Length: 55
Image (tube, rainbow, N blue to C red; front, side, top):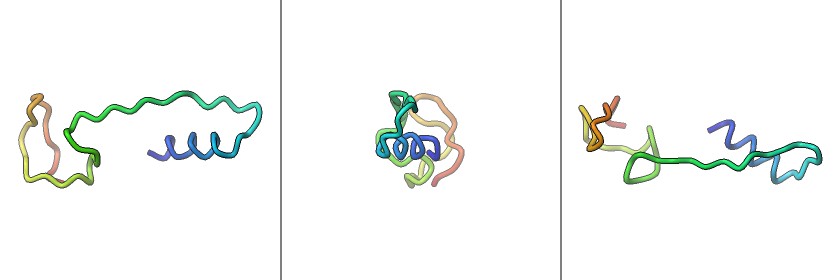
């Protein structure tokens, strides 16, 4: 996330000579939030991937 924020700041500042790459993010969950998206689910998700914590 820090890298995304740094690229966003560089793009907004319009620093000449700096190349800001196009960034595409993918989310495997149904909702945004990643680690901070609370869920009661544990074990594995519907893709068979392990759920490391409930928060």
